[in-house]
Image 1: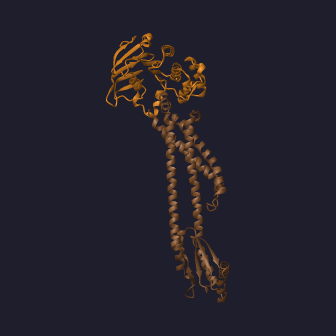
Image 2: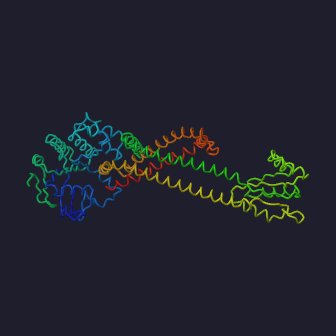
Image 3: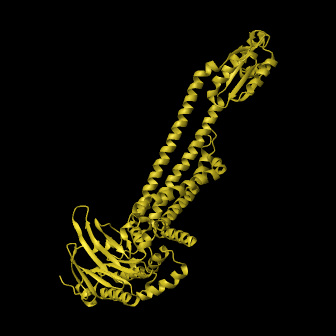
Length: 227
Length: 308
């Protein structure tokens, strides 16, 4: 479903970030990409989101070459992917409800659908009582749950989460991972996360890809965090 | 679907405008100042054209005829002149009228009146006062007179003198001055309009700069460029509309005060009556430029941050 074909990225200042990375992700998989800071995990995800172009190699989503999609229709492609970031990236002047509804509005969904789906998703991420709070009135864990709600609202094929628990305490970390796992197991959404939290990876018991200096050095089907 | 999108863009733009209160306030303030400048330029140009009109109205050319000139010939010349496209109007002063005016003018001057009495007959000729639409056209009119065959009766010229040649220097200088003032006025208008447009652009750009992360998030969540840009343009237009209304309201007391107190100093130009009689025009210009500046500046400013 996702296929990185010998992807190389050299930053403009000449430092290599990815060195001929080849990685295949099948539908319904839950993949954790681990490694030290600067190992190239986030860069790999940025390639998938078409936030950045590879210096060499190709990224395929299903049978589409991601970097051949013109900028003007990139948003259609991005609607197939739900994104979660370490720093949440919510729209500050929109409430929790509106942040989630925005993704549906942007996709051009009907108002009736929005009215029925958003409360449902808010309940799923356990935020029904804080629907009308603005991001600054929510804790980090709550903000990340809003972000996950926004990521899943359009029923994407894939959820991509870049260090989703990086800014959270252990309790919130556990909750977030629990939600992601549920989505993966119940809905069948492919999940791709990066993390350097050993506890998170070990408790999952799912596929683990380990990166170092821009290369994949391990790929275990039921992996542990080994570094 | 299209109308839903439009509705969402409008709602979202309105919300943005209200919720980002301080930024919207600053934008509205700057745009109000811009529109006030535009408004003052409208007033200034109205005042300028009023003054120019007044000055131009005072310039004329007088043709003095000899005392023997028959009235019918003079009236024929008057008709000829009135047929010229350059001529705005011709006033005929007969010999008797000229004498009466002379007497009135020297009513306190015994000596002159006595001299006139002793002369026995009317020494003054009839005259035509010619007004042109434009001061530059006097030369052509005078040339026409000197070549026109009807100005001589029985071989003798019936025109005594034309005061154009005496006034020529003054008329030339006045013409040049009016031309310069018009050019300078236009330059000032362009300069101020340009400067205020740039200031408004910079302010809106600053306002949108604070939203750059948000724009990036919208891109990543799958919003199309037009869907992201729309609300900012709506907010920009709302700023423009608000600013133009504030400016129009502010002009009301200013125009009233200036109309009540400065009309005599401005050569009879009443700002208040100008404001009320040209309200539709002023409203149209201010409202239109407010909407245009707001929309254009937002459109340009968001473009920078859509490259994710």
